[in-house]
Length: 177
Length: 155
Image (cartoon, rainbow over all chains, first blue to last red; front, side):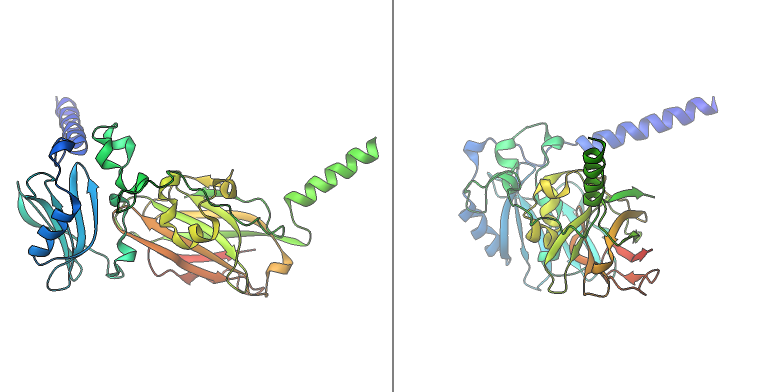
């Protein structure tokens, strides 16, 4: 019986985890209802934000910038109503997140060496991963990969050519421990 | 015919392993940063900082390689540069060990091993750790400035 309860508990945990990972999308507006980026930028500035970049993420607009106190912030807007769906900001080494369902909470303490420079903070979260969304709303998810901030199409795969490897370097092998 | 086969074999061996080379083991230990697996690029630059070659690229999704920004700038993310030398990303607190033959000429001549690191939802750390190749630098770890705890090479 104890084993059964443990298995049930584990199963339940996995199920909850899977649901949390899959999760409902933050925004589900049809593309026809989306406000233009300029309107989003104006809204963010009206809120006192200095906008660094605007992307689409998880069906929402996501604005990266600084607040009036100079703290780095990320704010997700409903693309049609421009309601704030979710936000996060850094206060020293605290990362604080808030959303319309759960209010504001301390999310995590960042490592001491974690930089405050915007360039260092360009996270993978900026990009859509096709594996995660199964192509749903892909027209608006893949902002980073297929267009720049102005919507101009960019190559989807790396296209550079590396200089030839120095012949003084042999053929490597590697292991992870 | 035997002679030409032998000559070919020697030529191929020379290509795979530089003459007057030593086997070097490069170990990158990561901090316990409590995040996703780190993408790492391990590569060599010369005394002028010019890219010379990639030793390993940990992290299989090419779309994220640009976050290894120093390496990416040098290579343009060219997948041919890492053909056969890519593997999985490296977990928090884990280590990556790369073994490679390096010619003697790379030592005491200003050549450096760089490790670029990037972790999803955390940060990009180009040249997180850098160590110069010297005859007596083996076994002496250097500290990283981001996700890398230590970088060292042994011979």
